[in-house]
Amino acid sequence: MENVKIIEIKKSVFENNDRAADELRGELKTKGVFLLNLMSSPGSGKTTTLIQTINRLKDKIRIAVMEADIDSDVDAIKIKEATGVESIQLHTGGMCHLDAEMTEQGLNNVSMEQADLVILENVGNLVCPAEFDTGAVKNAMILSVPEGHDKPLKYPLMFSICDVVVINKIDVLPYFDFDMEKCKEYIHMRNPKATVIPICAKTGEGVEVFAEWLLNEVSEWKR
Amino acid sequence: MHELGIVFYIIRDVKKAAQEHGVEHVSAVVMNIGEVSTIVPEYLTDCWRWAADKEELLRGCELKIEPIPAVTHCDGCGKEYPTVAHGKICPHCGSEKTWLLRGNEVEIKELIIEN
Image: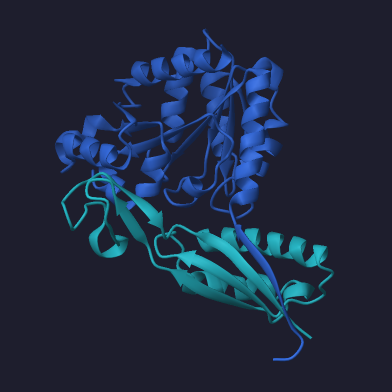
C-alpha cells in the first residue's frame, strides 16, 4: 500500500449539469424565450399532442420545436409538415436523455430571436430524462391510458419533477382498467403541485386546456 | 441505458480532476451511490468496465461503490426510518408528510492513485 495517493472529490455527478441548466435558464429569461421540456414513455402520443397543441397556439405565439431521439428524423419532419413551425432534430448518439449542454447546442440551431416558446421533445423514457435538468423553464410529461394508472408509483422521480402531467388517450378509457381518480391521487402523492390535464390528442378533446396552461406560462415568463 | 450516460459523466469529471492534479493513471474511483438513486450498481460497474478501458487514464481502473442507505424523515413525528422498507408513509405515526433525508446520492467520493 505504499505510494497510494487519494484525491478527495466529494462531488455529485449531476453538479456540472445542474449549474449549466441554471445558466441556460438565465439566458432564456434574458432573451424572453420559454423552454418546455416534454417527456414520456415511447408511444404515449407526444408528437400527436404537440401537433394538436401547436396548431391551437401558433397564431398567438411564435413556436419552435426540438425533437430529441436516439436516431431518425421522422418526428421533426412530421411536426414541420403538420404545423408549419420550425422543427429541428437532435440526435443523442445512443444516450437515453438530453442534458443541459446538448439542449443548449440544440437551441443554437433554432432561431431564438423569432420564438416565444421552444418545445423540447425529450427521448421517450421515464427514468433518465428525469435526472438531468435540461435548463427548461417547466417540465411536462404525458402518461397515456394504456400505460396504467400506477406509473406515478413506479417512476416517482419523473412525476415529482413535472409541473404538468397530461393524461392522453382518454378515448380508450372504457377498454382499460385505468382509474383516473387513483392516477391523480398517486400523482399528487408524489407532487402535490402538479397540474393534471386529461386529453385525447387524436380527437383534440382537452387539448385546449393544455394549450391554455402553456400560453399562461409563456406570458408569465416573458413578463 | 441509463447507467452508461452516468458513466460518461463520471469519466468527464475524473479526467478533469486527474488533469488538475497532474495524474497520469487512476487505479480506482470510489463512488457513493444512494440506495434510491435509481442506479443499479452492477449495471454501473459493467458500463464502467466497457467505457473506462477505452481511456488511457482509466485502463484497468476499478469502480468501487460505497452504498448509502436511504433514510426518510417524518415531519409528523420528527422521527427517521429506512426508506426502502417503508416507502413514503411513516411507520411510526402513519403520516405522509415525509421527505428523503439521504439515499439519492450519485457522488464521486475520491480517486485512488497507486504508483
